[in-house]
Image 1 (cartoon, rainbow, N blue to C red):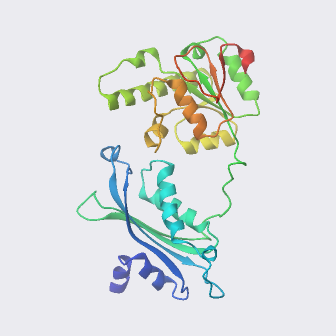
Image 2 (cartoon, rainbow, N blue to C red):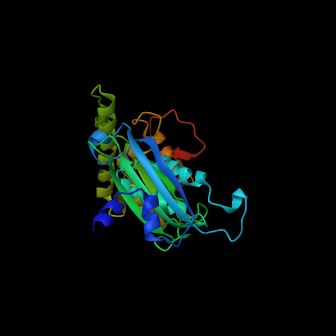
Image 3 (cartoon, rainbow, N blue to C red):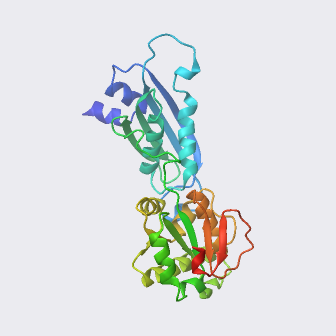
Length: 306
């Protein structure tokens, strides 16, 4: 029991040796410290903390001696996996980050098994972390569709005028009959444009006001489903549902959030369109925006435009 406890706190390299001594070839990354905005608690949002990464990868042994870098799993692939997953979106859980890093490394043909340990260094008197072990058998490699295989949606921006229009049911009928899945974005309600003078508070209030409008639209037609996460959006798009975007989570978690004001709701729709690789953004009704973007297909209030 004592040796098991000692081994539990050893470096992943020692864990790997103990768990599979017959696998002789390993590469490792030790004590890479990165400033990361991560965490589920409110006090962790909007600021970075030090996070330490330790990764060991058990690799397929070479059949012959070779000095060809293309035949081995490069150390860069390990550090790139960390950087790539950190750049995707802001995460709440170390567990999620560890899973994604492990999955990305295991996509490499030489990788057999990976140990990932991630620790927060600034959240307590000691290091707080998680360690996972994954193999190619644990992850369905190649199951994720490529960018070309993913269904591309259209983004439909509804102004306040459009949401209150008597033509709304006709527009939703056209969207439901379309072969292209639709993600609806709504405007900021007029009463939501008042400011408190505190930028962060104003931003949160504006996002919640847009979400309030999303629920108002959903209440008008049962076909409209309010969604707030990328996972929910991906599911709705895959199943060709009409969904209404609640923007708070994706914008607050984004590593590259929209640069404009939250009040530029058409700009938010274009940002979402680029995030989802949308076919186009269609804007219906009157709106306030100086945006000139080729992703916008048209603007107007005529139902035939759809």
